[in-house]
Image 1 (tube, rainbow, N blue to C red):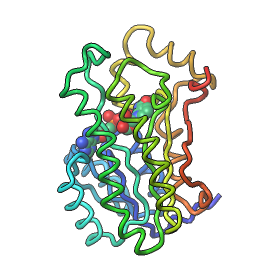
Image 2: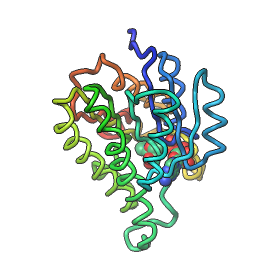
Image 3: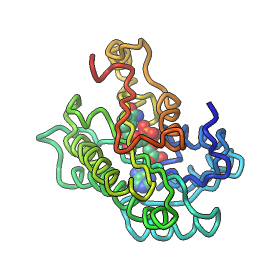
Length: 249
Ligand SMILES: NC(=O)c1ccc[n+]([C@@H]2O[C@H](COP(=O)([O-])OP(=O)(O)OC[C@H]3O[C@@H](n4cnc5c(N)ncnc54)[C@H](O)[C@@H]3O)[C@@H](O)[C@H]2O)c1
């Protein structure tokens, strides 16, 4: 299937690592011009240098000023943004249980995930509305459905992202802007490699993944990039669960 992303400008947050890094590669393979942004400036610049036409930028998703500067620079460098993939986010601290989570960790999770998605959408949406064209894909998680994991700030942030995605989708659709989200299960990335390497953990994830193997970044990236294309024109406010069956196990 041809996704026809030739010449489209895509902005991807969290692009130094994991899921977002895979999304930048797939977008570029489909012909998009990709701007990757991350708190890890050196990391994202080195990842984006490997992509034809890729550009890397520093961004702290939780800061409005950082978004303003990024969007201004990307528009000057690459042109109007057609596709926004909000994927950046911090790993939960350890310990992070219901009685251990302190105020700092709570706010770090809410700010790094939920506020980051809100600021990203609000920074890019006005020019999408003006052009009557846009695709926004927010990274969510199966933890939005209460399947996890004793990590309250993280889980609550994704519950918020799911609700916000649907609410924004309703507002944006009349302007030909599609807003949707993708909710992975446990995917093997730098964020999960620490706890997945503890004794027995990888095998437990594999057993709970009905498809029989632990999810990889490309399993998620393919769905994100499909939602970024006009093939997904009728997808409005949907959530794609990509968990290999973990959600129903
Ligand atoms: N890996 C999984 O199993 C999984 C499952 C569901 C959801 N998610 C979510 O998907 C997103 C990406 O996860 P991943 O596994 O690729 O993680 P990762 O740790 O590999 O990558 C996250 C990236 O986000 C960047 N980042 C963190 N805080 C930032 C900030 N304030 N501003 C800008 N960049 C920031 C990091 O520098 C890093 O490059 C996260 O929000 C994660 O919670 C991951």
